[in-house]
Length: 255
Ligand code: SF4
Image (cartoon, rainbow, N blue to C red; front, side, top):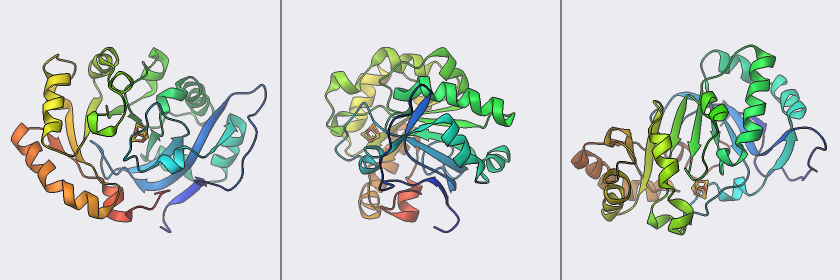
């Protein structure tokens, strides 16, 4: 897509050593001038910083090949790369910075330091969204930096063991934040039963925080699932969202 600008490409074809004695982030890809494809800000112009590594291993994950690759970058290297682009001006003009993965909270110490250094260097804090699988408790310092929590706890069909994917204490904490949404990937009708039993009945989250999203790593799969998920959302009185990056670019990464 000619309008999307790459800062760090996915699978760059090289590996580099961890920087010694300076802070760094392990990054899978970094790009801007695209749109947020999911969640409450679907359609908003956005930059994506995708980190390496995840706490989960969802069988249907469509970015696994990307977040399993990547390299460690020192903050100095990242600022050099950023300075060679127009991204800061775009963020200043309102583009959102979306932290995604893999698991951004897994690197929350590094991200906190990096975002604090960013604010110091450029004199403003961008509007920051995060994609979160909800299995690590965020620190107060990190929480403070995030403007929108796109939480996506994983249900049975992800294939992850329950004790790995379902963390009630962390979900309850996240739900108490004023800027938190819970986006569930849906496959079958019985997925709603799990949301009722494991999330709504124990009052871990509120109904008006729920967004249902169809499973779909390809346009065909998305189209196959979306109608029943729209119906589920209507009958339960909760939001629906698509996966606009799949609608627009199908299986392409880096968008
Ligand atoms: S939590 Fe997200 S990034 Fe991690 S494996 Fe599952 S879908 Fe992929």
